Image (cartoon, rainbow, N blue to C red):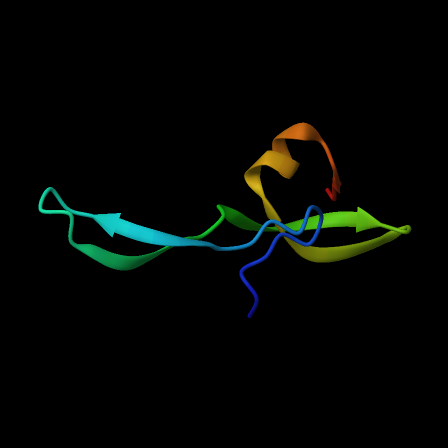
Length: 63
């Protein structure tokens, strides 16, 4: 199960948690994905899209 937006391709971002003592541990930030029924090419399909694509109207939600 890929944690990637099917519309814009936004995926996980890697970095470090940095403590006050400057200790660094690995950290992953995941996109805010939602499973939505959408209309694509005249068919109703389930897609995983990020909330930015959902809010911007990149897809048409199915009834």
